Length: 204
Image (cartoon, rainbow, N blue to C red; front, side, top):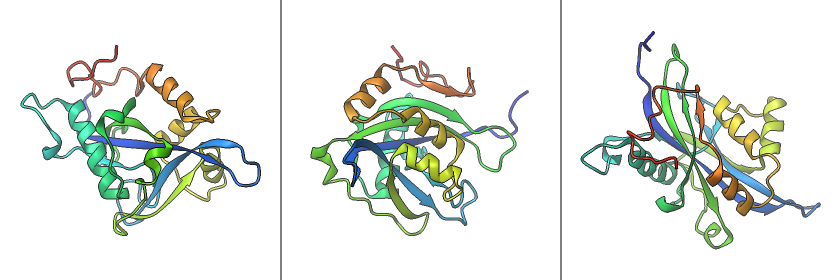
């Protein structure tokens, strides 16, 4: 059975950095989460990773391959929503999520990990637009999941799953190695909207 409305191609970025928690001094991973305006139809009021739909201008070749466009969209959306400039070559593709049918907004979203090492952290000062995005926080995955469980914040399902996948990592090098070597998470499995070979991305 075909979907009534095809999902819109999109991209999102998990910005990760190392940070020592005050008190214990234990090294940990933190990720950037943005709070969306509650007036927005899609995930209004939720805490999400930077990202958004792929625009026409994001397509960079005549073949209109989706993966290169997703990379461009990831860079652009992070700049627009958080004021951070990313280097496209440092994006690591980790997952692809398609919104289930019968929802008011549907997206087929490429997920990327972007490690922020010490040398690049100074340039990664977050600035939100106070329109679509109203606030930001750097949280460890366990802290974000704990606050969601306590209903202090709302996290979309893909965000929660991504954070759970990051539990246990304390160093960026370990996280990057696992993300680079691991299989791409695809939801739903065997999604017709995830066609990496056709879209210019080689999983090998």
